[in-house]
Each structure stands twice: as structure tokens, then as C-alpha cells.
Length: 257
Length: 286
Image (cartoon, one colour):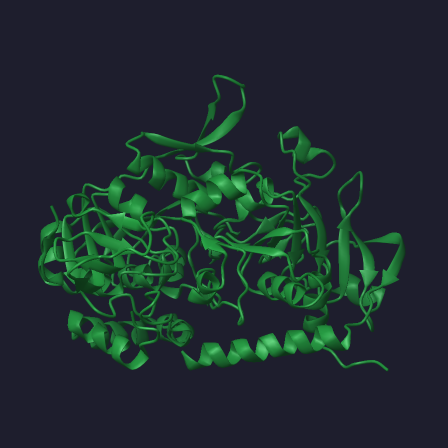
């Protein structure tokens, strides 16, 4: 008996599954926030969610629109100042997993959220990095979630807002970083993981109903597939209902205010 | 010692043309009423400092009050672009905007260094990130003990910092609760400061001896403006108007509709207008 689900729902649920009860997770807004809270409401009830506004151990009932919604503080174990958040908690090495989204990504999981075109004369000025440059270097590992399409998955980034695996290989280590960097990229069609030695993103799991050709058509570089990929297990009834419930509560709350 | 005064007096006395101006509040407690008063008083050539420019600086940029901006994330949170900021950077409308762009960690460290009376801040940051290539104010320093190379940025020392808080007592001591952001650091780093508050009470009665309290003698002016953080929020008083943040996308996308909105809601408005956001939206009022 299979349940109907959308590609975006599959993406959020596949992203949620990457998290464990033991994670201390620095949560980006948007898709990462949905995934982290679905994890908390399903298989990882004791996960620690941290938002850069300073809220530690937060358990929001509705997803925040901004990184500092009152809901995050109301439901947090404690709330610290922003300098303390970035100094003691992030730079201090207390975060196991950072969860990021982005406007553009390349094959080594570097992210661009700054500009399309030249920095001084941009074609499109994007919001910028916010916490991402230091989240990417200071968290134990990074998960990234974003929809797979040619606008987002590009052959060349105009700007590296936050470094993933740089030029690939041991680039992170050469720059003195001791953290793992991006270990998984979860899209609405498939899951990528970096190749153990080259660090190029490689498809390891394909979602139900998606073909290799669809993945190739929506990615801006020639896609590498692992020798053996698995099919991503379809969402369970519990996962889907938890996700739809929190989305419905969130919509209602944001429209009301 | 803080002087309790009107918003018009506080802006008149503290915010000058050309100033380096920091208006802080990390999503929470953003001093919108003060931003509107700065627009009404026609301040110009400001150098704006704020981690997340948010709608408050989209408005100041859109009216042409700013010559430059130092920031770390310039979007409408959860919604999309700040269209006035984008129009200034992409099309120089209504005037060119010089930008000095950092990461959140660097800005937070730079405020803290300013409050600590240090010339610069250091952090383990910007590794492999292109911002260091385009911002000459991102440099590096070598640890004299370990040899580790760390990022260095100048401390932030605003001419004037403006924040919003829940309460002040009649002497001008200020209490901040909830998401406290970098407001304490912004005030302590600045030459002059203005705090707008939801309430002025006889006694602050902080809930804990470790509450965030700014003593009156660290503040220049305190102003009573109920609702002064709308459409941001004041924890314990009223929630964030996510609906307004969503609506702003349409208002600000177009130059004419933005200008009309400013004319109607800011130029023809007054500080007391903000109180209606508390009356109609009060939740868990303290």
C-alpha cells in the first residue's frame, strides 16, 4: 500500500531521516527547518535544535518564518546572545551537524547565496551568507537540502559564500579545517554524497518514481552515480502526516499574524 | 545618564547627517518607530550598520538616506529579497550604496570587540569563503602562541546605536528579555544611544539577577513608544507580524508602491501610530 506524496515532501522526509537523536543541530531557515522539526517529531525526539538567533534546544510547534520568531525562544531550553551563540557554541565546536540550504551549489558542495554575476556589478543580488560561512567550517558535518534543478545545481559558482569541499580532494584539510564539511545533499529527486577521495557529489539514492535521466536533465554538471544506488524508501504514513500537520499549523499561524 | 524624552527629541539630538548608525534587534525588538522618525526628519548620508538589514533598512535605503551599509544577511527572512536593497545595489536607485559585507559571526564578534573597547575582533572564520576577497576589511592575524591564522575584522564603533526594549524604569534603566541579539553590545560600543521601550515602570523587577539590563548611565535617551517594534515583535507584548513581512514583498518590489507606502505610513505618520499594534494584537501582556 503506497501513499501519494510530492517531491518536496519526499525531500523533507529524506532530509529528516539523516538526523539522529544524538545530534546537536544548527538549523537554517526554510527547508532545513522543516526537516529538522520532522526529525524531532518522528524518530529523533531528543535531538537538540539550535537557531542562530541564540535559541538552544528549541521545540517549535509551528515552523518559524524567520530565524528569530518568538516561538523559538518560547520553546527553547535557553536563549543566549548572538555573540555567545557564534563564539561559544558554534566556534566552540559544540555543534555536530549544520543544516543548510542555498541558492546555488556546485559539484563539490560549495554554496552561493551572495551574488549571480560580478560581485561589484551583480546581475542578481542575493541576501548573502549570514551564518553560513562559519557554520560550514565549524560544525562537525554539514547536510544540505535544496531542490534539484539547473538554476541551483550549476557547473560554476560566481561566488563561494560558504566552502564545501572547495576544489575537491583534501582541500578542506589543506586549509586547516578539521571538520568533515558536507556529507550529504538531499534533493527532491535523489540523495548525493561526496566521493570518499575526490569529494565530488555522487548519487547514492534515488527517490521513488525518479529516473537517472531526470536527474541528469536537472543538474548543471555531468552527474556521477555510485556503483550501487538504492531506492529511497517512500515516506511512511507517520512521516507524511507529521510533515503535513506542521505545514498546516505553520500556514495558519503565518497568515493569522 | 539617560534622559527620558520624546522620539522626535531623541532623534534630533542623537542622529546626525553622515553618522555611522546601528539599529539592532535580531528579528526581535527591531526599532521601527525610530527608523520612521529618522526618515521623517530627513537624515541623510547615513552609514548603516546592522547584521540583518531587514525591512527597517530597506526603508531607509529606499528613501535614499544611506550612503553605505555594513551587514551580514540582507534578505526578507523566510520571504525572499529586500527589493529596495537590491534595487540600490543592482541599479543604484535611488542612489549608489557602498556595501561592506561580513558574516554573522564576524559582525557579532565586531560588536563585542566594540563594546570591549578593542580595535578589532578575531575569529576562526571566512575559511575558503570569497567574502574575504571582496571586502578589504577582512584580514588575518597569526596567533602569537600557536601560529594559527585567524580572521580579523575591525570592531564596530557606531556614532549612535538605536534599539527597542521591553521596559525601562523611570530613571532610564532598561530591561531586555527573549532573543537578545547584539543589542547590549551595540549600545555599549556606541558613542550615543537611544532605547525605545514598550513600557516605563516604577521598578524594573528583572526576573533574574542575570537578566539583560542596561544601566541608565550607559544610555543617552529613553523613549516610551508602545508597539515601536512592529512588524517585528516584543516578547511578552505582541508577536511578529509574519503577515506584514509577507506583504512587504509586494509593497517594496515596485518603486512607486514603495514611495506611496512611505508617504502614507511614514511621512504622514507619527510615533503614536505604533501603539495600535499593541492594542489589537496584545498577547500575554506583562
